Amino acid sequence: MLIFTLPSGILEITIFGFAVVAFIMAVRFFMDSRRHLAELFPGTVNARKLLPFGVDRSGFLIPKSEAPKEKPAARVLFRSSETTSPDSTKGEIRELRQQVKLQQQELERALQKMAQIGQQAVAEEKTATVLAEQQRMESLRLQLEKKDAEIQRLKQQETYAQKMQERFEEVQAEFESLQEKMAQMEQQAWQTAELTIQLEHSEQTAFRLEEALAKKDDKLRDLSLENQRLHDSFAELQEKLSEATLQRQQLARKVQLLESLNSDMQSMAESNRKLKTEIARVAELESMLQMVSEERHSYRR
Figure 1 (tube, one colour):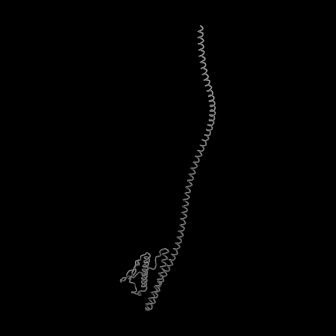
Figure 2 (cartoon, rainbow, N blue to C red; figure 1 turned 120 degrees about the vertical axis):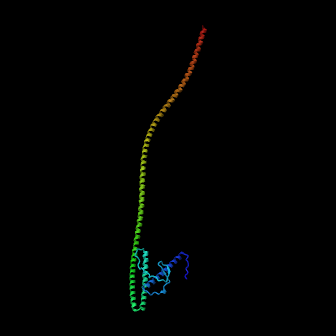
Figure 3 (tube, rainbow, N blue to C red; figure 1 turned 180 degrees about the vertical axis):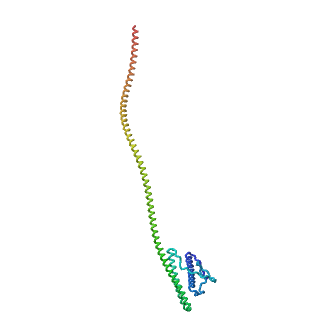
């Protein structure tokens, strides 16, 4: 009784799975080899040397039953020539080489079996068996030639696939270089567009600056005219100011003269007032003298 322990690590699980698959493939290959030998040499396979289990098409072990089974169909020695990748082509070449080696080993075992059968069988059976074995050998030789042709074809396919891979890499490199060039051209186009926009903006700015400069020139011209007009007005004002100053000086002299005349007139008025007072006193004295004289004259009468 076999005891299987459950692996705990992922690596152990992987190794265990690979071991199980390798064991199933070995058992299946052994069963296929025995069946192929049974087809080549009927009646020579010992029944008690067979294993008590078989392998189904899915690769699983199944127990053998005692019921008679149908004769298995002949193995397909050639695969469909479909386009595969370089890795799968290499795998097929290795598989075909392995099958060729196995068939060569089967052929050697068949030759040995033929020698044993030739020693044990009678001459007629030996001749018939030899002819049958020769036919089988010829069939195997043809199969080997076909395998070699298929190997050559797969090698050519591998070479063609390598060339296609190299060509694909070259095309991919060219495509990447074209993409880089296109990216550079797009960047240059964007830069050109940005420069064009900046140039248009600069032209608009220059146009606005020219308009502003023209307006400033007009304003400067107007200011110059206004300044000239103000200068003329200032000159006129200076002339008027000088004339007004002269008139003021003349008026000041006239005022001084009038003030002196006024003071003279005031002094004359004071003198006149005094004179009038004196005249009034004189008139009063005259009237008094006249009265005195009249009184004297009256006294004399």
